[in-house]
Length: 72
Image (cartoon, rainbow, N blue to C red):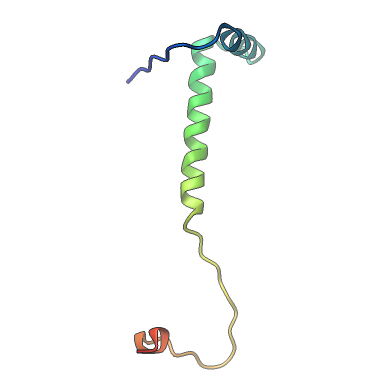
């Protein structure tokens, strides 16, 4: 498994993260892993949402040929 090293974290941020970890019954490392995994999952969801399909109801006969779609 890979590891990360993050420098120059303000002491107040570390203390807040420690308190958060305590509330969730996790170690600081466990809390940080959880936060990073959740952020990575959200990024995957955000990436997937860029490519959404929408269905549109149409009436009558449709010309689904290339020429009909691109009018060439």
